[in-house]
Image 1 (cartoon, rainbow, N blue to C red):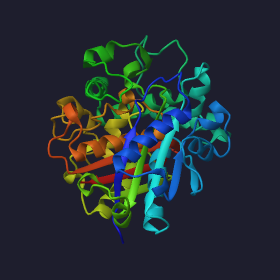
Image 2: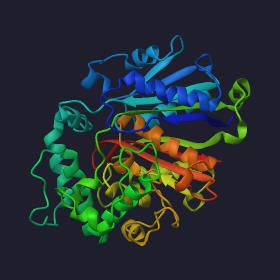
Image 3: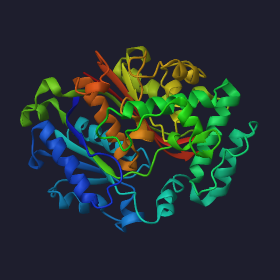
Length: 412
């Protein structure tokens, strides 16, 4: 079976693009990816479009991919619309990989684009609260927040401004980890401070202001132990990747030395595990599957991008990926092991909390960072000698974990 490669990849700056249209953002990412691959729209055999905001925020409930892509020069080829909550972009990428492996085409596009910044901010927040079984929303909420019982929030540690219910769930996950493994708020803040510092060197990042740990702890609270800088913002942006078989690379004349091999691409869905079964966590199962496919292990990874919609996500996923032992993510973060120059750099891009989180574009934005690292093109945030990289991107909630989760391993 032919190997699959990323021949071209690009992203826009993630942030508030109030004056720009969705197709304008998507067009920028597409043209960047085409230029990077050295090909044209006519070379594409299939396209996978990831987006969540088209329907609820822009009113384009149906055929969003066909509408957006037709405005930026793509028509005639199969176009598939992909929605898998925050894992939509990574799912589009996975489907592009599968269609190439099936031999349907030799060049495929995965693209994600979102416009989340609208005047009615609560309407945008509601997108997150649709990422579970809405018919049992209150039951879901009560089940998940119970995970945080046993740790009493200090006075004044909850915002008096509206925020997404999902932040309360992230806080419950934090408290569960704190009471189970001894993780501290300062360790969570260390992740946040590190990611905001990484983002200073990322020209595509929404926020580029460094924070110290103490500044993170002193920032406005959301709900204990989460403070404002620990949370991903509402973001607009787009990212795109052009994938090829070896035959496709030859056809478009891509520069092989800059093409990055997709060593593994895995999507898994939640299971009905219990809180006392962390070894069955969807992230752990998906990571182990990806390592087996790639013929690699956690110790072979040189850099990682993980889903940190709140800073606690990085600690949990570092453990699930086997980059540290269960319960050791917090101490490792505080020691600087996940920092650029440390033992295992994570979220050199700044992560979702700094780089931004435009839902359907998020996973592809993570992959842009990892491709840049493996090509040696990450500038001041370069991980020296990086040859293997891993990405984790989750979406939605079912039971006590992500409804969908993607793991991608890339190799130089």
